Image (cartoon, rainbow over all chains, first blue to last red; front, side, top):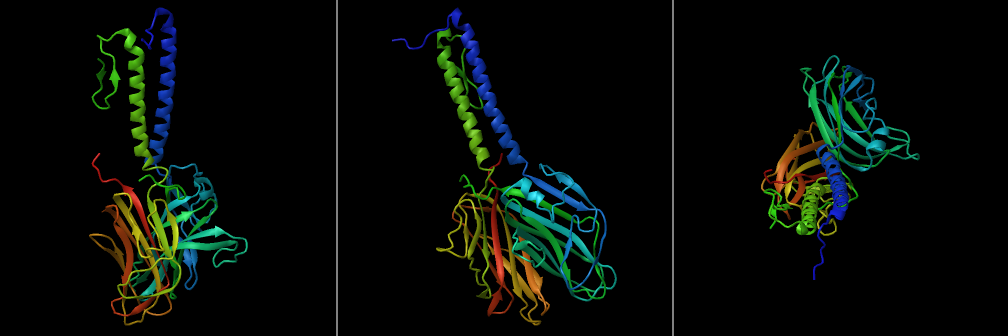
Length: 214
Length: 189
């Protein structure tokens, strides 16, 4: 028995309507795929670069550095919905906008004594991940609790060339958490400067709570 | 008999087909197109919004023998069942074959002025990566940070972390972390 009807002239309009519906359905699938492709090819990333010499970092205590502690800075790259005037460090706005997830956070700078360099004095650069906690009093930020960090220790000989420090950490960050870039040193003969051109960046690598397709 | 496109095998009517075959041919075409979309989506779902990764931490101070592996106690993130610290506290196990980046951090108090180095070792199948800093004595917590560019792993490969200060003895490791994050597939586009 014939189950499929053949198009007759009175069905032509229906065929056109069906093709229209199919075209709309195909476009919806393509639109969805395009959005997913753009998301996969453009991981949310913010890169910022300092434009002013950071000066006066005393020995023996931890100092906040990077965009934009006492420095001017410029946005080198930003493909996110975060406003271009939002600094990536010391700012809970960043991850409010980018949301929960696993992030790569990095910082690179040149730390150089403003005067005499003490032989083999240390430089410690840290990327610190804090979470809001009203009951916490520090150690660095009141009302926040240190959850995680990536840190690196270096030493400078007495030649005064400074040290170039690059540091990368992988963090599980939730909305409202805060990242800090810090340095501590024991160069007691002079304060420390951070040269123009220090770079900090944040890239969202993945959601943290979903299960990956294998 | 319908024809088919070369790349995705999408059917389309031939000039000799009967008009009454159109409905079936059109359904065949939309079904085939749906299949192509599903395949594309499956590829994209491998990269976004989640990829295989695991981050583990050692949060409890440990005494570990030189060249010994670090036992981790906390899973910070795991999107692909790559960790089971109860069964294996020392490793992240690869589940999806591919290329991965590995990052680590370790910290320890000074060993002694006579022991000049602190080296972390990312233990991975086929090749270990290392990062080293000098240990110049007391008054400082030594932080060592390392990052390894993409490395190919097979399913079942295990990634761990050890260290050496160059002297066979047990040493205090205050804390450490290990992150293994999928970077890409290995096929040539």
